[in-house]
Length: 325
Figure 1 (cartoon, rainbow, N blue to C red):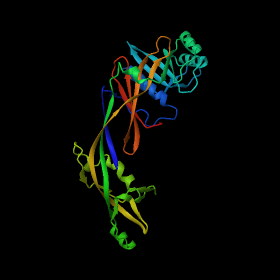
Figure 2: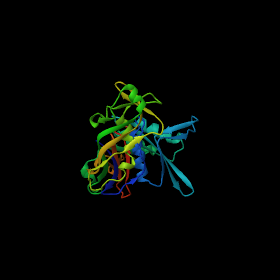
Figure 3: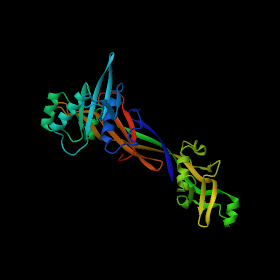
């Protein structure tokens, strides 16, 4: 059984910004999340992550985790953000390094974001060096009850369940190998193998069919009430690209029919808070934004849906990422 899905949110109506994180580099999750939060808090700003900025001290370019450019009259303001996702509380030394980077790249403002907080000395040093501190950390569900209504994710899947597969093979090669089989039981569709001529890879018919099922015209229109309907979509090629692998040998595969049942399935999931974006300065320990998540399966792969909701009532945003990406 497989499925494809479309996504809708209710409770509040987030604005989709982009598909952040689907191809994320290792260790970049916090930086990408901070970039998304800052873009949500300042929708008119230009946010880049990572960004290369000219280094006036050492020459060349210097990488920063997040760069924010905000238009102000006829000029623009540059804010840089450095992030650390480490277990240890961040100390004075890192705050000093971040402050020096601001000078090196001629930024107007610098923000340091930690997932583990800051020492008292680091907070005092940040005040002296004009470094803003932020913490991304745990957020209790009760903390958002007053400003975020229950947020749910409604997913609509196009489901299909294959019943049988009919192969369209080269007759001459079938006769030469004395093969009379043309159909296989669906229980073995994941094991039915074909060799791709261009790469010599062995693929299953499920691997050939599943990506095409997302846009196949036979599955485009299905009853919205969930009624199962029978379909017989065809997958084929104008020139031979695959050979079907029999125990007796290989036969040119011109295509195959998949006899299946298809239907619509709706599902509603509650999005749960996974973190908050806080100011780390004394007297400002309240969330600037909340992050809520839920996980769905899209095709054969899990997908995390993440919503960022500002505390000040601005529109929220959502993004999509693979788990652990």
